[in-house]
Length: 111
Length: 116
Image (tube, rainbow over all chains, first blue to last red; front, side):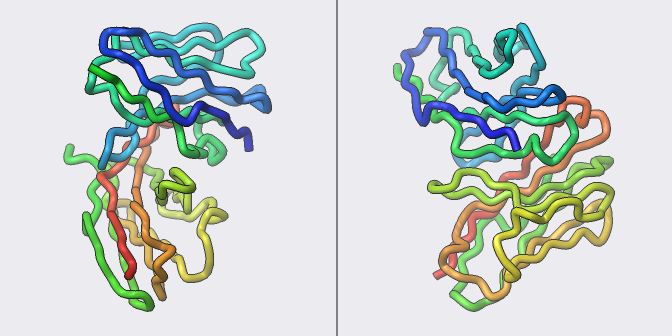
């Protein structure tokens, strides 16, 4: 099971770009990197997934270096509503080992 | 679509009592997952089903926990007897064939269980 390491918490001011880095040294060839977001009193919500290089959608960007041993979730110009816990998961696309959430990174956006 | 539905939303019970949590997945989804979330351990996978069949229950903490999925639209997680350390938020999530392309799971609102 490829586990991940993320910072426990981060603070940021409104309007800033936030980068959350996740380490996954034991990532396997078939593994993808997936990020979820969880607001208080809600279940997690899928944000983005990637395999290598860069992926961008309407919510975030995901940067993955060539060795794939880490990844960075980038949130552009955060607002107070981006305050949440962000989880990085690593595993093959439809298998069971893509389901280790851990404790995630608690992002607090400050006005 | 109403999304994943869980009931009850809150449950308070006394130690030793049986607790049953319920989940209705999104229609058409073929995978269902049960998670438990605590401050100390974060979000942990307990068990997941594919096409109503349990695939991996290695996360079920002990024999006091059991889960069933009698049909594609309903699943239960039962704790008997309950203990104070079972207090947590229990989430149900489902995933469809199309979402399996990126392993996107859709989570319910959770059931907050308190065992006194």
